[in-house]
Length: 439
Image 1 (cartoon, rainbow, N blue to C red):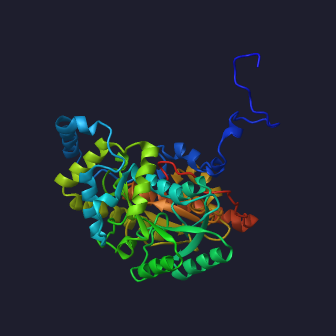
Image 2: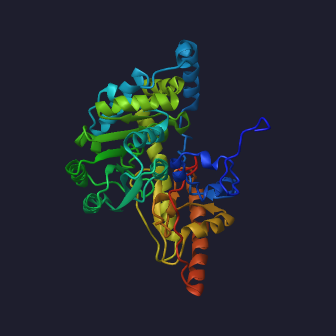
Image 3: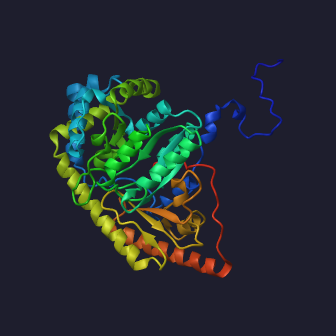
């Protein structure tokens, strides 16, 4: 070399990224969102966004929380602002066990690992269990953030159908039979049993033991993701899958939906041996989750009527759900169908044949309404006739106006389809990476 500069990789190709040949092979699974670029437009105040899954925090007691944060700094600042354990602070782990007991879970605080949101827990679990080419079973559709993690670790996702009662047991059996017949290694079933994201349905109580038994028979681990479990509109909680088989279920929980998403505090409850590896994985990922944030959550749980606060959230979201369902009945054209959620944040809409919701999205944003197209919630390119509508954040009035605008766009698309014929749905190579507005 005659100059003091690094040699460029010689590939014979003209690449915009000079580091392209240096990346690890697994980065091929890190696909960019096809709709993320639209959210800069969708966030404008004149656009009604039915796309984002942001919790509505207006009911939080901000004055009380502000005072408590000041108290933590004044009384325990040297601890709160210092490094902590990758395991999480003991007081919060005790409180998490009390919360999970509402769903029938008997847990020891030592088996709880506090994470930076439950997404971190999901990523760590995938890193621990999945080699390239391994199979993950997931509901179809499934949470986009989970699909992104599975793809990043080069796992192959096999979707199993749901109906109004959640994951279909016979579909799970058949998927496992087919995988075994093909010589594939199924590492785990990933499931959101309560108020599913994006489908809005809940796994029936009758099916839960059957799902657990099927996985036990086939030697398949269960990853139970439950951020919405306490947000049932009638106040009902369901028995966690973890409560039915503690040795074969890894449970993911979060305070993002029941307290404050910006604090990024979640947890993993795992069998003891798995917990040891999770702590090591957490140390390598973050060294330790933020102690200060954990202490804020812990003091809130200790001093505030958090169950009453969750009740307020449920009432707010139920009012918004009702506004959404009423508007769908009033405005959407014939041939559309949708789920009827009993909790959580989302309604899953299916549109008539010939309409591609991904292709329609830019035109919807032009009409000042946004949604999440269905293809982002499948790993195999399906979902072009579906969309996820979120009712958690907009006011009821904004929800009704958003659905009215969406219906007009949809009717226009149906007219085009009748005039020019159906547009063949396009297949995408992998799941769409989530942004803060889409998770």
